[in-house]
Image 1 (cartoon, rainbow, N blue to C red):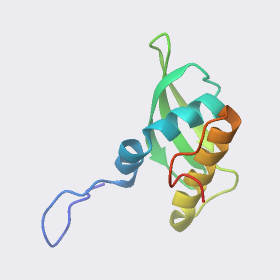
Image 2 (image 1 turned 120 degrees about the vertical axis):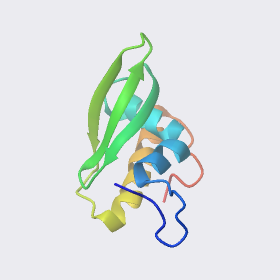
Image 3 (image 1 turned 90 degrees about the horizontal axis):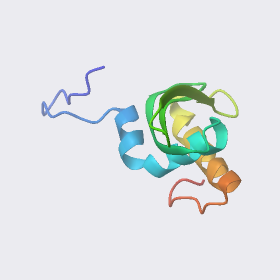
Image 4 (image 1 turned 60 degrees about the vertical axis):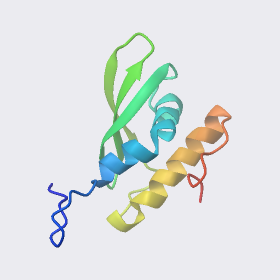
Length: 105
């Protein structure tokens, strides 16, 4: 999908790129807590849809694994940010981490 501003011609970041740039720690927490990869060293989102977030997880041995972590309930486009924040807060709680500012709400 093209994310170029029609008025200025400037390139805007798409929602998945924003998740990757702004929520790197939360993505790793989600991979560790809910994707079955407690040894995750990094994770990045490949998509966020109404069902959850799809990730590529790098494990401690360097293996890359593709996985999908569901939201608690289907989330409309307007509610996906809240669903992601809830998932990130739940992951932090499971792992005993303090939520990242703005991740809980």
